[in-house]
Image 1 (spheres, rainbow, N blue to C red):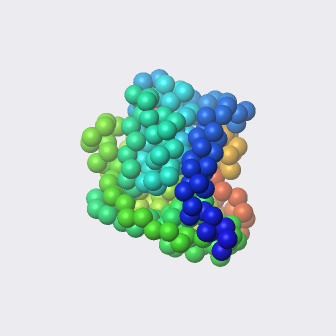
Image 2 (tube, rainbow, N blue to C red):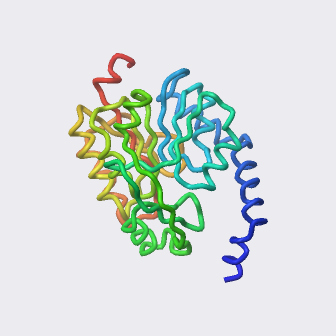
Image 3 (cartoon, one colour):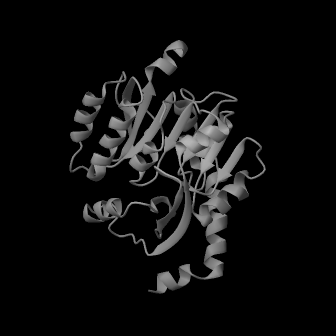
Length: 260
């Protein structure tokens, strides 16, 4: 109760803003690992979508690689941090919305940790039940505007890479995409893996696609080569009841063949 009371004070919010800014501006060894890893998808002057940009730990890397970045982030606190750290960069466009399968409005459940605020009540129940985030709460709520990947592509163009990290809402985001793009990454957790499988199935409906994955923040592929959807599903099923998390990487072969 005391912690909640302190978190509601203006001084706490100001100190958190400066802490976020300090965290995103510092250079780390992990930043170099991210630069090396993402350089295989991102080239200078290419368009990238960062869906679920949070305070910008990926935005920083994508901009460093010379990309034109569309950062989609609904949370007020995170948008303030993005503007404070990167607002003067002409390569960055910040969109304070969420993405889904249609255009409209929705309710975002705000967590006491901004990295796990979510649009999915089912995902929240799953990660609380598993113990992954059992010590966190989602007591806040924010009404947010929703658009789709198709709408963003119509306005800004087709990106070479889309990073999606939206705490269980990945399938709804992917459902708003009706044509392939070269590369996509999707966060996964074992306790909500059925949503990841739905994403894979939707992507298969768009074209010839293969998959790889990374665990945690390793910034390296677990497989030497991309594999089919069935192989990817079998691998992910093997992590059932584990406490790992990671990202599935999708590559549309017809769009990337000429670059290999």
